[in-house]
Length: 437
Ligand code: 5CA
Image 1 (tube, rainbow, N blue to C red):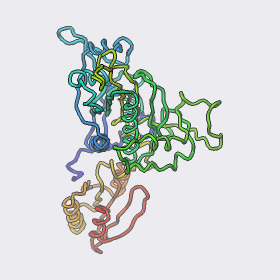
Image 2: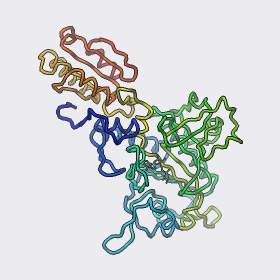
Image 3: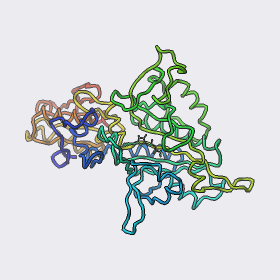
Image 4: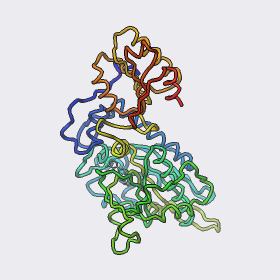
């Protein structure tokens, strides 16, 4: 992509309304534009990151055996009256009536809609277990939308739902999602710590929040300091096996959110206990028959009876993750994208646009990078070198390849790794191999 043809409206000034670093950097990098309080348009650079995150989430859900569907954003109030949640949900729910006077709502979550789909089609224990998920916009009329996309009113969520014959089987599904979450966040370069959590308005008796540590996080958390070094070996998961022993081993180390933590009963000695702030990027729930009973989602059991299915629901804040990753990975100069979610892999910086030899060297390398399928953003603007460096450090692509008149003459480029600042002068061909490899 040539920057002169792209739409990346970076800002020089730090926007005053942004209180936390990820929000400031997202606005400055031209990733999002606020449309109204807590509601954002995604500009090209931000949208690319959102899509990358979404794709990793999708692949790990698929790997865990969940199947993707797409449910609507607009739901009928009737289903929520059936489940009993319509009156309780409160002001966070955006409610409206259609032209025929029917009560509608913009979905804050989808337990009711998915249970309605399930009960219509699935009638026998033989069809269980099933896990379905979708990645769809939600609306929650938060009292205080803040921190940019981290606490929006409209936000993108992956929500999955599991259906099982009984509590024992449902816990196996819960364990699959638990491990899928560790794998998902691991692939994004994040250390997400699962913590026993309160179930809130979703209900149920078993729940974990997945929290990444960041100073500006909204959640106060307590965990054993060894969590920071614990390797979850997330790449290596056999979803056909019972994952519970592995999870038990992992969760022997203490971790709890503020609501669940009790200093009096905490098993960790004070010197090993880490008190920190974090961002909740995922939340999973097992809630038995809380929805299947009122909505009458039942299947035939092996002995010929009928039983309400046991369900769980599993959320990931896809749009929140864009901000969360920046909170966890930035420096004074800007964002440092983990490779897996970077909007482009390489920034190709032409230091003297208009100089024939430099242009020729940059064009040639741009062609080769594109040919090799490397996502490259070519800064071909007629701008000062300092401004180009500042913009490219701000948007935080993993690699920078810098070409100036001196290097063009000598047949070398400078290759810089954004995360470490390491630089080396090498032949263009060698730089190409390095960023591919
Ligand atoms: N039905 C369940 C699981 S599918 C549910 O709604 N869970 S939740 O309320 O915990 O939301 C799931 C995830 O969505 C959260 O972990 C968080 O990462 C994200 N999320 C929740 N509210 C917001 C918000 N206002 N802005 C951005 N992300 C949010």
